[in-house]
Length: 395
Ligand code: BEZ
Image (cartoon, rainbow, N blue to C red; front, side, top):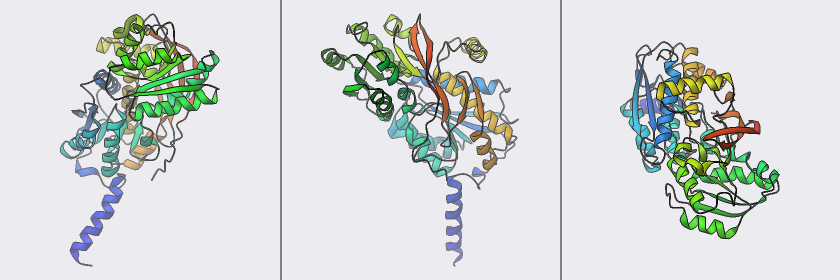
């Protein structure tokens, strides 16, 4: 073999191994220097507030450790991903190739996450998902270096259908944005609602991030379903709640949703949100010492009420702390790092949870109702719900 072919063969083999980051100490930073943490989140657009809450929660978990990871100082690098899927790969590469981060924390939007997932799989960089629920990330495209601390898109809505049917609401209209988060939330809803004996009489999909709901609300009024179920989040969720009430549907057709509908928007939506029932892996009103302490500390530090996004960011920080401590700050020790993170039990404000084999939380799903400007927990819709990572083959 010529020396050039030898070099190429050797690099190809190393690249293959590096795809999962098991052998190559990524682009040689001293493991006793600062840990380079990349935050790829939306800081503008309809999900801007979600990005801020995730960053706050993440920093809070790190601050609880004296601002260090496994004894090492941290340097942060930030990219506003604008919830723009077409820029997902380019933005993730800015963090990996330009800023040479050790870990990417991001993001919110499922379409953008697919860009991060590609970069994470190709480069082997550690990827922590603090929100985006796209099924493939912990399913068909799962990877040893990718860990989600939030949910998968079908998890919250899988638990929503049975309580609706139990309340006598057997004919529903579904409405959501038309992209993977809305489509996969619908998958979960269908599974639970149809199994419980419900019928979906119409599926209405609105382009993301449109907040023009008038025509769709007129159509819903004409269809006269027993109930409406939906997925919206962030600024769009607040607008949908207000438009639903303004269209005269509130009080006539009960509104249900994936719990993101009422997260972080209760001040903005005001009375329009009262009485709305949702399912989610968190609720403001979880009355445990752990959640109460978290809420107090967060409100003190950020002068804001925490929401599910803050909790997911916080848990991403906790998971990283736990991993970094297990390898004493040597993040190039991938095998031990991934084992510690994969086997972790996270003592979260939402309740303790562990990772599935695809690296997605196994967690309780709460049924909540908005009462007095709070997401009150009114029951457990599903206990220790797994996303079993369809198609996941951990390489
Ligand atoms: C998503 O795109 O996966 C998503 C965005 C906001 C809230 C929940 C899910």
